[in-house]
Length: 548
Image (tube, rainbow, N blue to C red):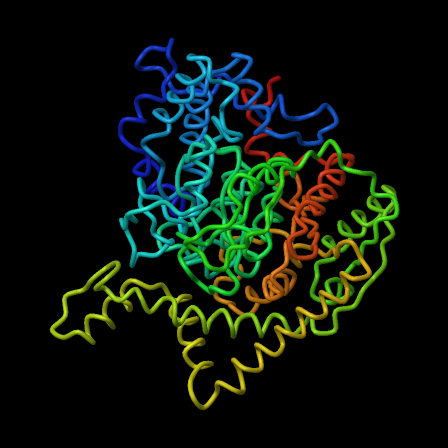
């Protein structure tokens, strides 16, 4: 089953010239490509003896400036690893053909004495979710209706990361147009979880989370409409940050639900997602909803002790329906925060349970409008038809997958004249209640915490035919999007499963535009967490990767 799902497109996604250029320099033409023939990517140097993750971004920078490794060598190493692991994972829909060229440009700049002027992401390999536009690669949104579509521009977030020296390694897999929680809803392939290849990586940013977890790239861009960065981060044992609505420009992000969509960051450490957010955030004239409030650089070494910090544990997130193993991991995380000096108390958000139905009404309603642009005329796949209405209908029927069709129908129904007040209007009223309940709770607490998901990663196909069960898995995250707040997910423990356990993520929620506080708290939490090393078997079992 797995080989059927994971193998057909794995090699075709690599540009032809990279299949030969990513070979050991000193090896014969017949010898097999091996990661050991290259300087290893910076994971070993970025892992302290105690297992606490350090910044891979800063490790890359130090290595480049010291001359211990070149950007080209790093790029070759990551591409080699990508080729070795992609047949098992299917994290990427497309791999860039300009990775080595971009790396060489960085090396040339360093050789000319311009090392100190390098951007903060210089030489950093970045994955980009395939609903975020890139001019030099296809941007499909995970949908057959946009197969081979190439935008004429880069999304603002992509443009900014490139300006800061980041190298886009490729476009990561996702549920079609971001509608799903498993990445099984992609129109092209199914992505596996590096912790257990028979389990889902979460969604809809499952490709981005899987790629970071498997060290196929250093960081990745995802999008978060109802938890699509945070739930995969929890399932794959990585750090995921959903910024405040408006912190990062949405220009170039394929719209699903415009009042909820946010571009977010995934990495293996809090430091990395903080550096990454700083690189891509800021006001953008092409996005009227982007904020002019500045996000200043964060020195995590200046993080203050957490003594006296008031933390609210959302009571409703530990109710029935949450796996016992997840509850145990969260309770252990609470004890850890108390050991750090935090004052943790339960808080109640009375409207919390209403968030899930309100979210699906609002998101589906907005998607029914946003996706009407894909009509086979201006964008995407076009079928042969005798008349215009048939062209629209046939193009959409053949181009959209079943989940997208269902949500369009749900949204159209909720917006119809006879049901608008009963559904859409009431959902907006619930959204206001949720926003106010968060505001009240954050007036007496520095942050709020909860599980990132009610379960750990489940097996492929387990919920594919049970959409209500899959939707229920979003209960921990959708309220944050409805309120427009920032949230950070940090790995906090394990539950039995797979060959070495399955990771659990702790969600930290802050007030609007208080990402700095979240990042500093999250950094201290991860750096002091004992006995947990969030490196999946796919990486840990590779002797060339683990060497120091």
